Image (tube, rainbow, N blue to C red):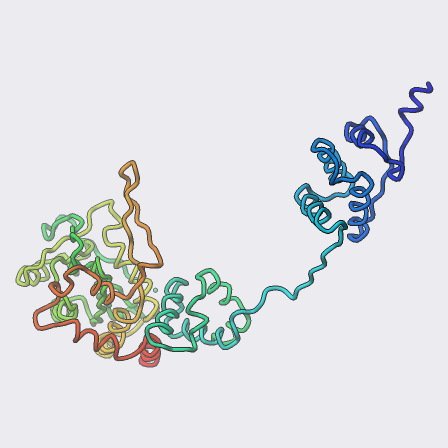
Length: 410
């Protein structure tokens, strides 16, 4: 009975004097009454008192471990927190709580930066974060606009953060399916092989909706596979009288020689009239393969990112086609080719031979810059056309001036 009474004796923390008593408490064979205040200063004082009482710095390694385990159990601090506290105690001979009160993160981007960002997004039709970052870089580094000094180094993720800010929001004030042609022996069903050369264009048609039975205009969108050089032409109808002149203008607008013409299986392109035109120009005609939805994915992506963003989804009457086409030739096409940066893939082949495309920010540039970066780029240009002529177009205005003109003319 006396032995049981001794085992059930509850020791107070103040009477704790040996490492063995600590070890017994951790093993559960010694009951200790303890109470550590929730106040942070008092908890720090408690840890300091235990470290001093047991001369922690002079203890052997195993005993130090017991003290740390005891403090973890009684103080509520984690091992990493106690390790930092003990290091400070060993260096200073005492343990003081370091109170650091801040007003949050320091603001880097000003209200003027938010306004600039909002205006840039508005004039460029709210592009993705990568394109916004590139446009800010170009505005500051290439066109020496000092207002973009801070925004030129912004991260892509923070662009999306700033779009949610109240200061940003304060400044921010779709159709007919293509008819396929089955069983028509026109064009070759295969994916074009460009061998890294420009001149392999992907083409598609975007219809501007019907209204009360009246057809809207049609936009012909053509994109070069290598450079992403893009030409948009608007026509009243998809018929020989309108389509052939439009295709002639489209092919003339590209600065390089067109070698391949790739479309889906829509009847507006897969017909003898278009085939004869391309044959006269010595242009190979290919069309998408069945069950290969990515064959024309490049131009379909541009349909959404360019054509739909500029013209929207609502009905535009056919008689406006001439005005739209004038806008395309004088404003839209120069903007998207000389002032709108695009991402370009890098092909990576792993150890198993599997191919994967990676889109890196360092490879982001305008279609015109991509064309100039190609090896022997001059050899791809049309006769009597030089990069000096094209440089004059590219440098006639800044990215933001070109975007402002586009929004004004639209």
